[in-house]
Image (cartoon, rainbow, N blue to C red; front, side, top):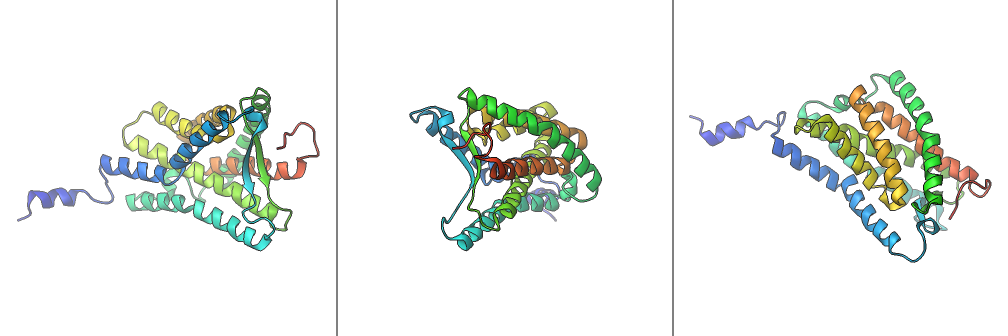
Length: 266
């Protein structure tokens, strides 16, 4: 005869985790990825606002050399950084697969490429110019650090690495902060509005190292992306849009920095 403990243990199947398992799992994923980045960003912001001088006189460097003067070693570190940053995404995909849902549950697949590319490109076009304008205004108002999207050496691998970095940022953020987090919060009983706000505030928080403007701008972007995900149930278009936005920022800065007067440089 099965004991009561045995029946309870048998009911806790991997395919049907309890609310506590989902909650703890979500906290662990965030602690290993963008939740930790949010705390780090907050500490960095405190350091910036308590440093003598204004925020716009300080720089936030995004893609910089890891081994100056040693290009092959630098390339190895760049590729290592991209690869290891995606490990939390692999963990999330594993958890979704163990749940019995898989990547398709959040629309991170290749089943609708035309939809993802079309919607993502249109979204990037709408957000890109507005985001750049907001950054310039917030920096001029002293609310933002000077963002330096890249300061890599002029090696043959510079632009491929910048594109890889853009894709890595996009996959990491959209899969975890939108697809995975919104799915788990929904399973935990959160309302759609509360889940949207949580995702958006988290996105803004790990950009706080750029300043108040970086927080607000990414908070608004988070609201738009989370809302569209709740309508489309796919992160595919968001990954496309985010990748295009970051490629535009990284590669555009590399091509224009020091050549146009309106683009701030450190």
